[in-house]
Image (cartoon, rainbow, N blue to C red; front, side, top):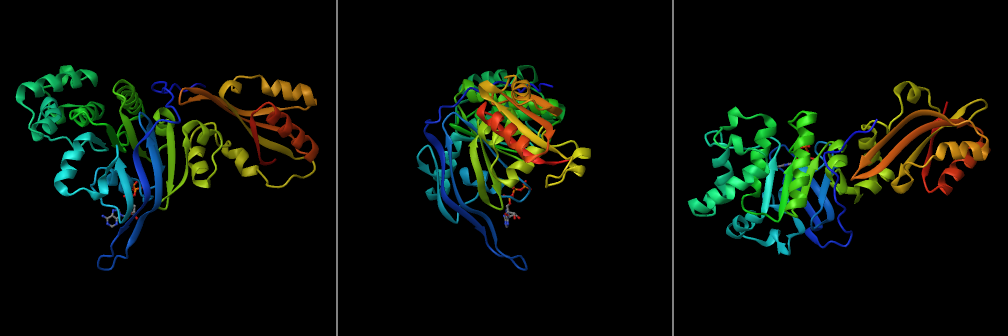
Amino acid sequence: MHTPSPASPSPVPEAARPIIRFEKVAKIFAARGASAQVAALSDITLDVPEGAILGVIGRSGAGKSTLIRLVNGLERATSGRITVDGVDISALDEKALRAERRSIGMIFQHFNLLARRTAFDNVALPLEIAGVPGREIKARVEPLLELVGLSDKRDRYPAELSGGQKQRVGIARALATRPRVLLSDEATSALDPETTNQILALLRKVNSELNLTVLLITHEMAVIKAVADRVAVIDGGRIVEEGTTYDVFAAPQHATTRSFLSALTGQSLPPELADRLKPEPADGRDAVLRIVFTGSHATDPVLSRVSRLLSVDVNIIQAQVDEIAGAPFGVIIVSVPGDTATVSAVVGAVERLHLSAEVLGYV
Ligand SMILES: Nc1ncnc2c1ncn2[C@@H]1O[C@H](COP(=O)(O)OP(=O)(O)OP(=O)(O)O)[C@@H](O)[C@H]1O
């Protein structure tokens, strides 16, 4: 049951310098007519390390779009500071902001291509606006079309392209001015799963080949799992959890994170079992445990060791081995006899093998 990720991310050193920084940022939308004011973001402090792909995940209305739009100045912060490569975006006037946007590429859910321009001319547009001479435009656009795999579609109009091809044009256009960072606003939400994986693989490719930092927003944990080195979970305008994708998947701390993770296969219980699960132990009930296998221990024969060591029957209910950020990751749901002594012996034995075990309930 191995789900291949689009590409294996290369680890970003923990100590990489932050290229995008949010420092105590708040955004309040003013009241209008009968609508009250909205605190869209509160106390956001977040670093995006250079060369990383950081994914921000949250439900509808959590503040994701507002957060990403602050980075290229499409929204202005009410308080706090946002810097991109040391430049304080919140302090720029409109003219300086337009110049700065050349170093901040952006791609969109609905691609935002100009219908009357070919693929080539869409990619060329930001260069035309920047006053780059025609010959140089050609020399820059052609390799970009090649990079995104669209050389043979250069003269096609958006209406003649598939969703995935349109997003490839969007990516090439975002890269035209050689940005240092790329913002991705739900770039795969309008695409089917296979095309989503291809576009995520392309993002990973441009991230590693161009050392481009990517800040993406999404409402899908599968996107985070496939492509992000780090993840920030946003809820009600606040970041409730942040860390490497691997650590957050292995040990989610916040209820919102857990609920996003439960949508991924292997994390949640089969519904029939979930319905029967009781919070308290009782005579004759078995305990249901979730054991998470990570890193170098992901493929250890832990269950047979625990079973042999403690002479306990370990019954596997569900098992999945996967890959997150290029490293193996497994989730196994088991049941064991539910008496307190056995449960704590099993949990202790699993933890001594450097894995984590959580009692989900009793059946
Ligand atoms: N221009 C605006 N004026 C007033 N309120 C706004 C404005 N833009 C966003 N909001 C409010 O700010 C909050 C956060 O919105 P935002 O669009 O950032 O959320 P989101 O996480 O991107 O949601 P979705 O996934 O649905 O796009 C919401 O309550 C929204 O109604």
